[in-house]
Image (cartoon, rainbow, N blue to C red; front, side, top):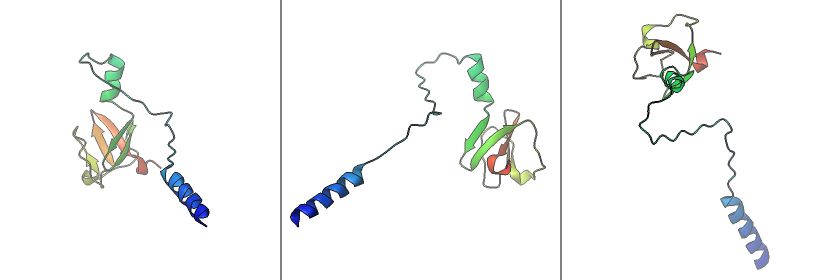
Length: 103
């Protein structure tokens, strides 16, 4: 009886501490330790990314909005201050539409 209890206890401890993580093949890590200027292509991407993630959602860059939004649904500044109501974001003269609204 003691052996069975020890075996089950060992399995529970081993099973409880096992952690499987999957590497994200699309993850990019940038380690900047220099004050050198960015190359022009990277600088352009930083100023005009394809997506912007804020505390209120993911916004995708579009050439123009597909519908009209009210003033309450538009954030028109570079501070990225969004709310749950924000549907359109204007950042560096680019238009970004909240991802849930693109579907």
